[in-house]
Image 1: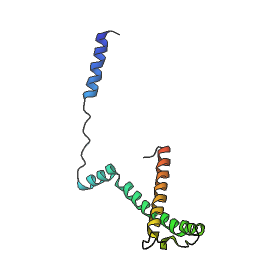
Image 2: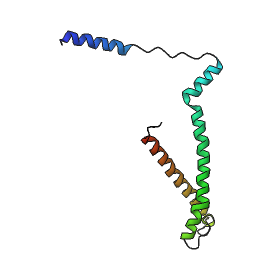
Image 3: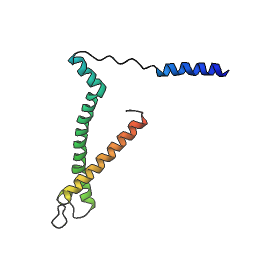
Image 4: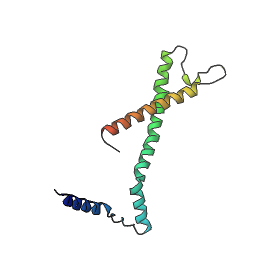
Length: 122
């Protein structure tokens, strides 16, 4: 191929790349704008994820308080109820329960994100 042919092809490529795509039509009317907003920002998916996350958090908190903490109380002698555990005047039991719940929830979220990445979900 000669230099002139190469330059000609490059000019064609430049012309194609420089053309701006036509602007997306703006929906007319309040209802159409609202539907466009919902689809563009995926509001329904966000709402569903938020609601599910609330209930998963409640479920995990129940698992921690009703299953794991009694098991910890059985393993560590003298700690029948971790919530009432205190060091001197400091009642650290509630903090330990909140910390344990956070760690479990964070680990579960990590696992969900890892599975979603493996399945190429967004």
